Length: 232
Image (cartoon, rainbow, N blue to C red; front, side, top):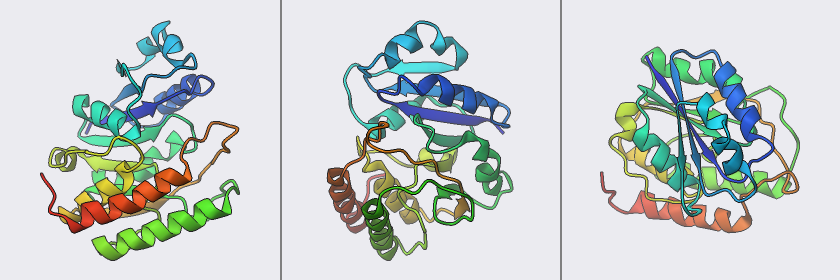
């Protein structure tokens, strides 16, 4: 079974080399690493072009900033693995978790696996109270409409069997990807597992990008993708 790791990257000059090294060191084999640079302006693109791109299987450069969902759409489209792992470029999520994330799929028990920041006894960095409240509210509303019992719908760690993603068209360009994909896998009747993961969150001074406006858009996406008939 081949694994594809898709890294959506925007302005991660100080972390892109480390995240690629961490993914390379993860105990999955064989794996392909695909980086989608979403028109970075801080020097990330230059580092990739100057040689870092030779350490991965493929780098795709967006000519304008389109958002996380758009970057994942690009990367997933060109991936060739049997299992697709979504990896953020900021190392809030540890690639060392890959073996336990993919196990329900490789064991034939799951079609999709979410890495939950809340379903764990492992340590996590203490950060923003209202982010936690908003996340739990969005997860609750999503669960009410999908009839899933997730603890962390907004998690950045999501793993899919290729056959699942071949049935889904990603429409959202930004962080609306999370509620959109959750609604669509629920409508497909996918077998979904959650695995507890450690979480090393960062502050806005350290480069965190999601804002309250993305939370409002996620609310709209939950309603939009759960209450309308979805294209396949």
